[in-house]
Image 1 (cartoon, rainbow, N blue to C red):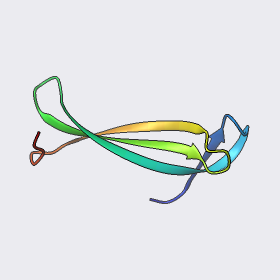
Image 2: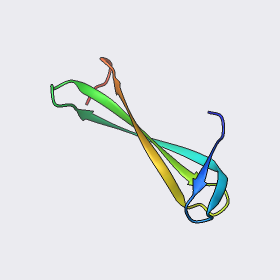
Image 3: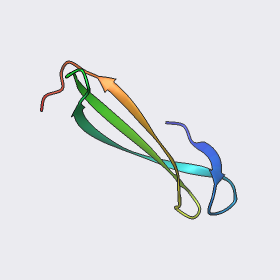
Length: 64
């Protein structure tokens, strides 16, 4: 994943972000098993939270 920059609310400047990800498995409203990948972005300088993104992936191979 290439580095991204965004405005850090703590530093009050544009900074390079560090991205971490976590994955959880859930069942959606229709009963399909999905994987939700959450990307969290933190400031490289102060470590403050900047933003996060949830990405839903439907995968037939997911088992609970």
